[in-house]
Picture 1 (cartoon, rainbow, N blue to C red):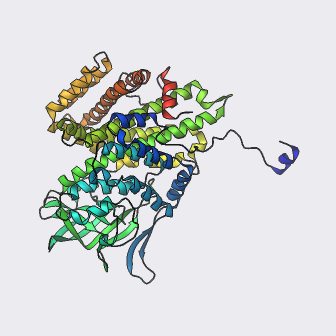
Picture 2: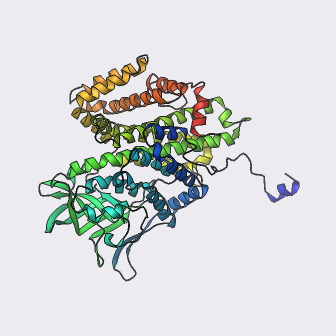
Picture 3: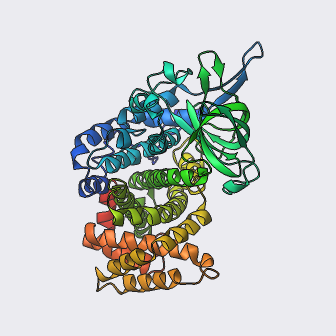
Length: 547
């Protein structure tokens, strides 16, 4: 620096980590590639590689930041005072939905089932979710609604538009569009997850239609072409399909009161709405609305696992990338022994989450297999509880790797940190998930007990696995009065046992060894970097983000 620079107050900027470079999100993720092949989606690799290249470009990362900074804006009325209930989005919102539709994430696993279709969709989801998470909300709901709607005699009216891979943003009746999206409206002011406290009600209007009155406190993706919602139907609750438009001249009676000012997931709109005689069609059996939506929830909760695993990976990649470029105390951060251990432990968590998510996706590819369906019913809420919770911790730890730079809004870490809690809350928070694990376990007592024992016996030399399996079996045998307080321990033990089995079978030996030692023998690995990972550190960091 010369004298003129000193006088002018300028200085040379150095020791700042650059943005992530353009990359292929599929080819740079060894765990994802291996999981896709192992879980039966190898026929989809070329497609995944192509989309991994597009999603890994820096222009999309910048666009995602812009979309989340701008956020949606409600226009309830036009300039003349007519109610229009329009939500204006940043133009990039439509681009991310176009990308998701083109990948087929909104419908292809159901509309065009093929070997490994759900695993391939999961891989797409894991990549897209690393770039922009909010756009996955309407994608999840649209996909989850399809198996429910497919049983209805009028599904043929919707199928071509649900199958179309060209996103259609136009605010028109479904009959005038080539593609459509479906949202959800379940919870109300007074009840939240307690759906049996809902007060909205339905009255028959003839010809298979019902008139709906009431409100929803969280109405996800309010400008979707239709929503599935819950309402009282006589003495019980039913599920209803509620279109945004009734015909070319009439919007349905759905009035948006305001948009939620959310902590994260800010690119996506969530609303409070009131129903002024809105019209809907019943979905499923009369009075079986909650059971219908419990089925739908198994699909949306799977996507919560995927979405959190995606955020978890992105946070780890950002942390490792930063540590490779930032210097402190004479060395790069990644060369500092304790920092390297923390980063490797975070990478271990990401690898276990991705491996579990892809294995769980495989269960959705085999509805004919009774064993796979027991696994899906019990492991889905447990995985949602654990992976979503761990993602919150990982996001905070990765932000800390960045130091003060991680705490400012013009970097990537603040958005990841604000996004991290949503999947833990959406579709049932932690306690709800753990109690669902208990309910599912009670419906499959013997098959579950056999599966747990088989996991431990498959690795006879792993005493920590046997100890975890024995504790899990004891807690599952508790009486109804004692068991609920152990529900979180049960869910944690179940997930860690399955993750340990998967890691021992499929990860490098050094990696699986430190997973078992830190997560089972080490009491759950609650503090990242607390245990020595030895030679596994180099392997984990290279698998997480090749240098």
